[in-house]
Length: 336
Image (cartoon, rainbow, N blue to C red; front, side, top):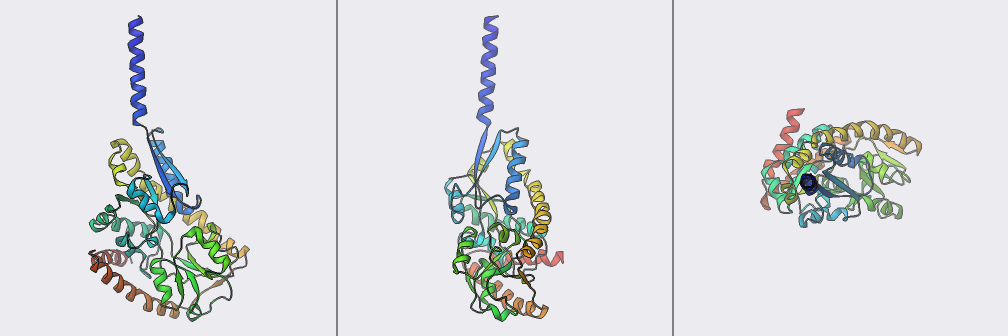
């Protein structure tokens, strides 16, 4: 009996060690605080833990692992296994996905933004582009069209943007230059201080970010229908870490992306946008709307020149830029 019990105990310990060996923890580098922009990552962590009975966990950190502009670098050296970043923070490091930040593409919904992003992310040129950083694109953080919150006198025409200092990255910044604004690129977490100190007089953000980063607290106006474009902020994983997962854990991760994005879209279109109008009203922020003629003039000045410049620059850098641009614009045309 003693030998039998000993054998059983050893077997139980062996199984326990095996289960422990299969446990996996990934560190995830985000910034700011939990908000609409990070809901898909939060949901992904929840789903992965559920599907693996807690054996695979995503430990989410808001700023404790890296500066947001350095998240891609952290991924490249394996400092953490997953991160979120915005393409416009370092366009030279991820030129392939900046096609999604070109102004006035005509994207009309978060669902369409997801479809476009995933198509670009899966293009061989994009896969190779991010592979330079040991990174695999996992999912986008779809955002609606940006609009601008500012202080001082509200613009009544696009000419009033002449000389205005505005935080605007990527293609939105290029578009604002065409109407005489002076775009400045800075991370979201730096914006409130820059606005309060007068470094910038206006900020281009999606609604959730205007609320999350406090730009509406001292603002006097908001552009309702400028809609120059949006930014592309993917969630990436370290490629070696992804390859090192067991089949079950990899399936739990990749198989949860769609549900995580569905949760994100539902939350953004619901709770976030439901809060936006009241937030403006409570603070007495003037809503500025431009005429159709002015918007068309803005689009004519910004869209085609920006696209042509992007294609020329990135063709010269060795990317199939025209092919990527045609992929995006073709999908939008088909949808419309």
